[in-house]
Image (tube, rainbow, N blue to C red; front, side, top):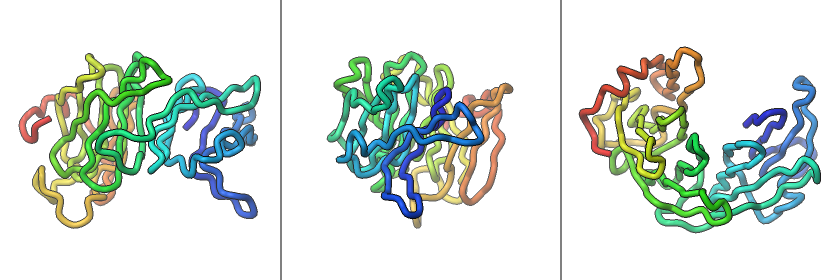
Length: 237
């Protein structure tokens, strides 16, 4: 994840060096990243970081079975500082990924393993004590992969259910306002075989507002948001 001139990299394996749960690099010279700090230099008890979302050097780290940890990288001291954590919470599994609401009050978090976990809505207004305030899913049994926020819309890459869009104008109360099934091999609400198939990621940052959705089996989808959010029939919130 790139935030300004810093690049954060999860689960770093380098030949001849010990595994690192997360590193931060300087990109002042973008072609030659310079390692600034390893997370285990400050917090060796974090066994893995799978992914992270970073805003202004505040790192919302999805730490697999260790849960959610929030760090800040202090460039002045060249150290990570823990700001908060959520090491246990309802419907907990393998903490895979998260994304922050535009007003920085709410974090949307996905547990990927075991299959069929709910998306968690986390109040991070008090960053030292994040709290689960709601959970939701596209369909019972569906598995979420990655969340993305663009303005007041939360887009979910939802494996076999495709792309789901939620109105988060009230950040702690997502309301589904559309979807597109990139993976029509199975009817909505049924998940035969491995659950880890279908929509893998959504790219939201094109100037046109067009979405790019990547499906592991079906390829690349280029989506008109107005059409996606007009499809309100089908599965419940």
